[in-house]
Amino acid sequence: MNIQLITTDKKRFLSLLLLADEQESMIDRYLERGELFVMHDTQETEAVAVAVVTNEGNGVYELKNLAVAPACQRKGYGRQIVEYLCRHYADVCHTLLVGTGESKQTIAFYESCGFSYSHTVANFFTLNYDHPIVEEGKVLKDMIYFQKKLTSLRSLLPSERTNNLTDTLVALWNVSVRASHHFLTEEDICKLTPYVREAIRAIGTLLVLHQGKAPIAFMGIEGQKIEMLFVSPTHFGCGFGKQLINVAIKDYHALYVDVNEQNPQAEGFYRHLGFHTFERTETDEQGNPFPILKMAYKNKSN
Image 1 (cartoon, helix red, strand yellow):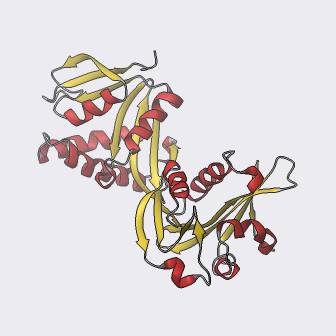
Image 2: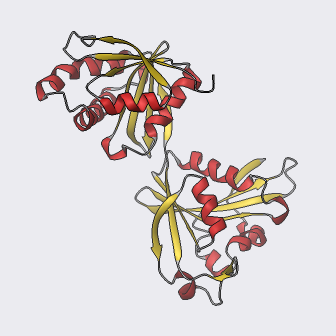
């Protein structure tokens, strides 16, 4: 399947757009100011699906319309175009919104695509449409909004690790360890900072996870070992650490990681992902009195 951005004569796809938004005057509110994407079949002779995305400002974009041709439904095309849009907009926005009525099937679809509930606009359908909108035998009343935080992962060469980027990542490390490594004192953090700065510059593989243009997590890999993984505290619990570990294992064949024994949450995190402790040391690599648990990955399916 091929997905194209359409910039002219957008109304030629009106029949498909009406499948998702059955009032043409409502489509007119966003079609021209939005970006229209069309998925074609392999012969590029027939439109399979359409989507319209608008820029709502402040790093937020909205999926206004998503429709799949009736003959092509339940074949995964809707999910494909959503995944494409998430990749396409990851560099320019941090949040993708989508609004829908109280349709269990539609809500389940977006949740399966990684969206979560955001907010509700009461009486949206009754106030904006000139006729009742019915889905699954139910007259729609409120618009329910879902959101997905978009991220992009970049591997940075040493030449790309500028002073500004290094400063940003060191600052991210600083707030992350303060929120998670409670055994560290202010003096400890100050002593460790130069080592972290040098490690960011020298590590063989540096992966930085961005939301919009802002780094929210980073990971360093040397050989088969994850040397560092830090997530911004505002994004704890969002699954980004797990996302990075999965990349480390799958794409970089990382098998080992060192964890501070005094950070039981981190030890539990890695253990949950399939790592196990095979050695313990009394000090860290700098000789500080922070016991280290050396952990190795064991594929749970083996």
